[in-house]
Amino acid sequence: MIPGSERDHPTFIRSFRYALEGFITAVTTERNINVQLCVGAAAVVAGLVIGIDAISWALIVLCIGIVLFAELVNTALEAVVDLATQELHPLAKRAKDIAAASVFVLSLTAAVVGILVFARALGLL
Image (tube, rainbow, N blue to C red; front, top):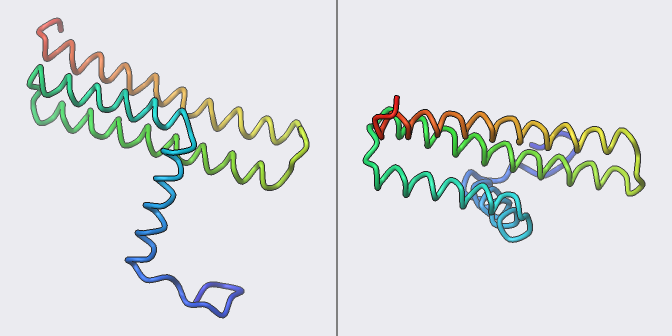
């Protein structure tokens, strides 16, 4: 049962459907998630063309997944902040800016990992 409610938890399938709806909503409404998906797809294509090894694939897939996760969490946090206040509050701005910064830092880290993986695969390292 959901605390404070008379309703039971949704089934596993229904929970999965909610998650899929959330992902589709993010893809159809948020520019940044589409940028992250395109960069991830480019990394996958580059990996296929170059022929990276299994460990390199693991690193690339992990980086793509973590960056997408961070972007989705950032989007959700921004929605919650917008729900909590419609005014331009300094704390709301702070929360949104810090959440965006976390995605930025993670994206830079993933880019460095990608550069290292592909430089090694091309024999540059």
